[in-house]
Length: 267
Length: 288
Image 1 (cartoon, rainbow over the protein chains, first blue to last red):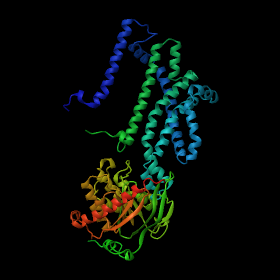
Image 2 (cartoon, helix red, strand yellow):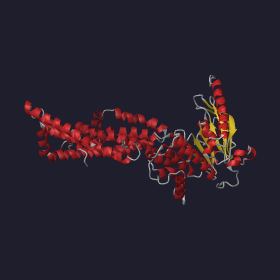
Image 3 (tube, helix red, strand yellow):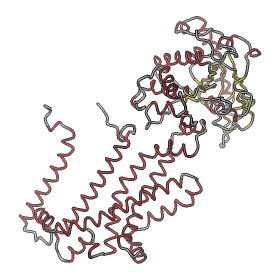
């Protein structure tokens, strides 16, 4: 390949944001050094990197705990959300009767109900998971329901003309039509599951062996271990980015042959 | 010329050149059909039409004259407000049973974008639970072959041109070996070259398969070229105002398009269409 790297679109897509990030970190480092900002106010990128290495074990354990709640909540949200959507499209009456409660769940701030859930549910992991499910489920329900209804009316007429049963209509027509919407829901919901897990942990203030990244942040705040606080923050952000990237990849895999969103435009 | 597959029935030429009395069995009888939508719009008023075995009937009219509504009613896809429709002298229940089959070709190809061409074409068979019956693969092969899509089995619809998508749509309609094929402006969105080519292909298939076709179009030339009968409709309210037989023998070649007879029929149909349009305007001001 003789093309210079700068003309390679994929390379630029990765390199350009990385370059911006590196520049920001460099300026941050220089500013902290030049202004002699104390480490307990704003730590330098080097301080944070040191904390990542030195506190690796406790940070890693906390990360695993947060990931456990996030993935558990996300998986439950997907299963329950899809089940609810399938139920909603069975009849207009079911949707009319139940959809307002899905909205209710969406608009109630999780910090307001998390204390109740933590009181009611003994096991902390499950209490946090339930909170995160409540935050993450709505985009799945609303997007998938919309998708299951967004069927080409002519295709639907054709299915009816060939006397397709409800099951055939669902499996061969509604579910494939809903896939792009469903994956759109997944992207939003994966991030929300993480946010839900972190927010619930803040409210719960779980310590000890079951402490996640949110508790690490709280603790580091009390102890003025600001570099560790940043390190925990970075881990949460990276988790979110990886989750999002995973969803984009999944959706691309599933839709790349046919859906406009996943098509590569050739010039 | 291949023999007509339905040998006991009159051939297309006979259907086109003989009177209704000796036409054999009616495939479709629309009797005094009115269609009023919920908002009070009269889409169809007193539509009467009989389609006979082996005919190629075009429904022609200005936009909004209810041709598509009528076609959907013929497909059992729309309820009538008053009046009756019969298929093979029986109610809609006969379709599907007794081996009587309808197929509908929509204005757009209406393919499932997530499925490859072959899967799209076999859909009607799958829906009828005949997807695994012996000989199905051969049927699909032959349908794809007939519409000229051999070798495109594994393509996705988006990889095909508009004309090829329409061909896939026709293959899907063919695969059930329908007795009555209903086509709703299938070639309206295509360029003229592709359209002419597909017109010839449809005529060829109609002859070979012994189909009965009802074809909605807003092109006078297309209607005259294809049909054994052109039914002219007027708008507001939608109704049938003229019924013109095209007494020209099949097969019709591109030479027919430049013949004086063709021009004569086009003039006759155009005049009917103009009368139909002016009728629509006269009644336009009436409250619905």
